[in-house]
Figure 1 (spheres, rainbow, N blue to C red):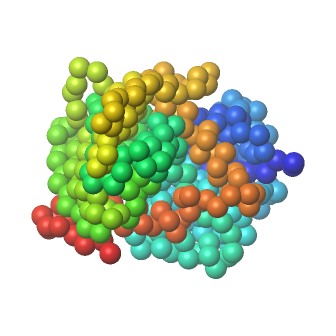
Figure 2 (figure 1 turned 180 degrees about the vertical axis):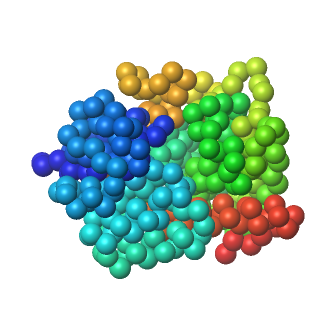
Length: 340
């Protein structure tokens, strides 16, 4: 089958694992890289043997014959780039967070709808193989009716070393990682009915919040607690893992550090370890945070080919974005916020 040709926009920190993961997936070929800083685009193109480099996305779209566009630029550039691609009739894969506001996200979804092009969000954390395993346990009925769940992303990751611009971001961990964690909550437990959120700023010299706690009522009445932190000092830092504990009437499933899963019922506990696959291009310390891009890409490619319905369309991701901004509203008002 002929490979789909794509242009990648954005040559920052995440562009390298993004392109490396695409090269693991048969059926997609990057033919052009674009970044406002042309030397960055050229360096990335050389590293991955991509033929062309640009510093103007409109020029790239005009000159190249593309089947889709992969937007890996900063969030402030997402809306204009998505609309630009849609105007040329090109499907778009876009990084999270999708947009800087809910209204902007709605405009992006509508622009792609009117143009009749697929708009897919690169929501890769739900493709952690450990998260998929937790989902399989829940859906398999072993736990019975699920009444409570907890999702933790708490670590001391040096975020500002590779993304220093985030120091001045007025909205930080909820906008940056909350989109991932709240999407995982929706993936595991269904849609939220209400939520309450508290935010804290722990690290000196930053503008936004680096600690967030969100409690939601989801699905058929499951209480879900999402804990996020870039300021957690622990004996063993769990970055980049997402940890979970899910309780049901008949048992529980725990996703613990070091990729360990324990399923407990009244008959006992079954435990196993599920390490991520070893790709040679994964950067030290990143592990599952980068390996999950491969199954995410594979799914997105199937959706672009019409072989599968995409789990993370722009329209679906609006539901996650609503939870992010509802969380900010709840923290500001210090009140429970209805989400439906």
